[in-house]
Length: 631
View 1 (cartoon, rainbow, N blue to C red):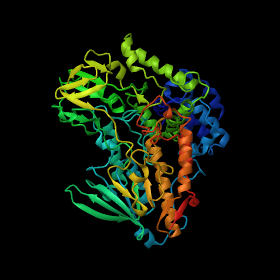
View 2 (cartoon, one colour):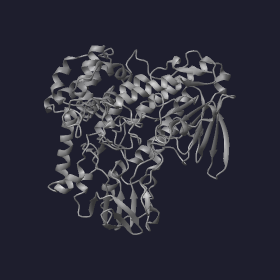
View 3 (tube, one colour):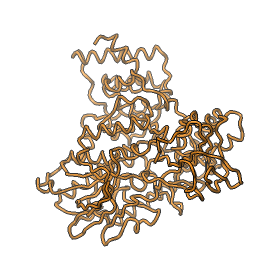
View 4 (tube, rainbow, N blue to C red):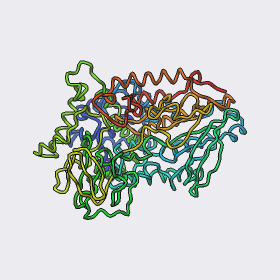
């Protein structure tokens, strides 16, 4: 390829990851200082290098790539820690602590840095491996990833999936506007990058199709029993196995056994229906967003939507052009951040750079990691001396609040009544931070009403509020979330001595060590378990890969020792949960002025992780056998 044509292709690349590629290949750290003043943050709109400086990088990158390809030059050795640190800081326009370097080196696949795959240290006898069987509940992204890594280790597995195909939440949720609010190039398996996402925040259909392709590429589908729901699982101590009861599509019950059980059903898979008088008497179509009926025509109809959380904020702008009237019932407003890329398509040049430029995709992924996860973490910690703790937590959190209000004000215009309804009274990130999907601008439309008076009852043809106002409706949409506090429900999972998870946890206080293992439940591993939801951003797939690795480390330890069962020690479990609660006491999600699904009735935060993603990555990199009892 000639330099001019290569250079033309390179012009589609973002500045920061392209610069990192060039420095990593050339070893020329002087270039970092040249461009550093023009990179003010991890998002591409925070880059302001003048055209001449961009052209210089394009030209030098093309020349270097051609020289390496022709053998006239050699790629520099992997960057030393001091150079890597300088590159990291320049890439995101901020100072990143050195403790992140091992994680970054792993993500980059640098020489000498072992990939976080689990391999046998002393391979057990073939018969021991052949006899070991793992049952996985759920074929969503966690269950698929688990199956892929179990197969890599040579372990037999069966996935029980209640739906007719894979995808989990990305199969079930089919409401208009459904999509991911994490940048796509971070919300994907690290071992199966997709450089061809159509958008930076892709819609539901594309995400589901990605999971379908992964299931086929890694031959997971033959291991899945579809339309099969696990009803109960009981630990048999004498036999050292789990006895599992499933119900197939015909209603027939079947029995299976497995040496280990992985529960990959997540926290957000069972819809929560509001306890409102008359809900069952509504005469028209009524549907939860997680059970959307695509056959229901909305054109020209009056739609009442209850709930303004994540699904509501996606549904509203997606249907407003079709309906005659959209009446939205809001209990409390949510913060929503504007991202210029939310509706943007990925440019062809960017796709080419991701697929073809060495190291580019890894550096871009790190930008997203920092921008949408750990880079935000300090702003979510409580400053004990902060003068307005009801509104914000610290100076950075307050500045964020002001920026968010400025955006809302710009969208709703001069309507002070609407502004008062849409600005939350709690600190940013107290509830899940949403992406503005055109929500605030939609609220200004003549066909849209935002109603904050509490609902008194549902009537056959509308909604009545506590103040006595009746709102007529032809269709009822319930954007009311999930039963996140009832993890593993409605399954009955019984451990030693017949004790169930529900008995151990009560109705709404699930706890686990690392969110993965529970005392008294040998060989049981939870994916997306208690205190692992990511409320400060980040990628659920990144977290699930951490959990998958830890589970495989446990199974490897079990088999290499020739044991049948392992379970976490009670004191280890309790100490970890004490640390979880202590850390949450310093974080925004425990704020006393915020009610959310993250908390149980007593105010304990049970759903979200209080840790940085770096912390959880470190927690799950190794397994300490002394924390477990083997039998």
